Amino acid sequence: MKNLLITVFALSVACVTAPAQSQATNAGSTPAVPAAPGATGPGPAKAVATPASPKSLEAKTAMCFGCHNIKGYQASFPEVYKVPMIAGQNARYIAAALNAYKTGDRRHPTMRSIAESLTEQDIADIAAFYENLGKEERKPAGEKPNREPEAQVAGLLQKANCASCHGANLSKPIDPSYPKIAGQHTDYLFQALKSYKTTDNHAVGRNNGIMGAIAKQFSTAELKAIAQYVGSLDGEVATVPESRFKH
Picture 1 (cartoon, rainbow, N blue to C red):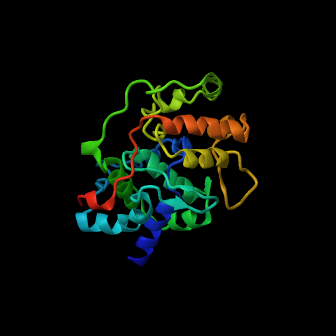
Picture 2 (cartoon, rainbow, N blue to C red; picture 1 turned 90 degrees about the vertical axis):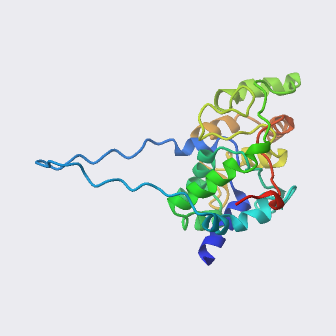
Picture 3 (cartoon, rainbow, N blue to C red; picture 1 turned 45 degrees about the vertical axis):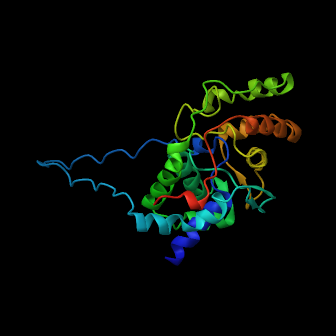
């Protein structure tokens, strides 16, 4: 139980939420092992994952609540910024982010050590929980952004081609392993974008060929302008206070 609570705490420190990191986990599934020569019957049945019981799920997510379910809560590593809103985020993206910490594609000492202790089922349960949290009250984002960017920012967005992965409204990604970014905290988006430019720090940064190439085209000021616009949009991610949880 101690390891599990520590595990989920790490999720609250730097989870998930940076834009487009999920591309790092788009590898194909493991090929099936061919039957041995002369085999006449089917192989052993594949185990079916069982969803977490309410009690188990509560234990897995307990430490997340102290950061991701407090509005305006701020992290302090590697700098001060609001932790990402993850209620309503794509489950596959949350899982992709956690797996990226396991492999070191996202560099954060605490997150990596904690993510390595998570089982596949733990990750799946936590990700599914947050994807569905507040679903009944969630208002779908419109087909297009609710406000137009200024000319300068429009040019930056066109150069970055954000909509090609995150959708025309930046809240309907073309693949569920990509994040919804519209309406996300501006300071978190800014920190995440900068992290894709960090390649020489063993403790901080994110390895992602696509996002790295995009982020490196822009100055720090330009990344901040992009983050400010994207964060100002209506989106589908939210912070849901603990008092509204229904396990």
